[in-house]
Length: 86
Picture 1 (cartoon, one colour):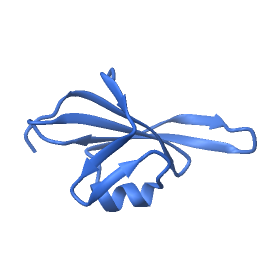
Picture 2 (cartoon, rainbow, N blue to C red):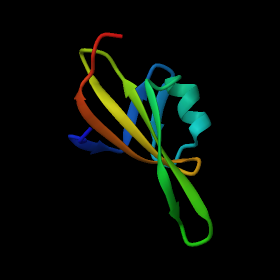
Picture 3 (cartoon, rainbow, N blue to C red):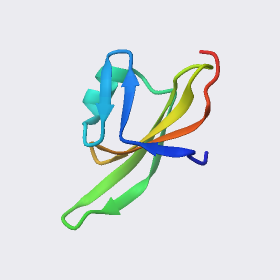
């Protein structure tokens, strides 16, 4: 999915998610993602971080959001196409 825009935060049912947060923090605020994908690994200068994308469907009146993690930290929030009924 091609992202339409990049955001620095995402409002979920249990709070605001911002860049740099851990997977546990995101999970506690947004719940289980609609989809999880392992997308590879990257060497960060000291060690190898595994990259993972979590996609959240925020419903038909909102959008699909893809959250990109490197290791345990949220690195990017991308807004995609319109969501669909949950």
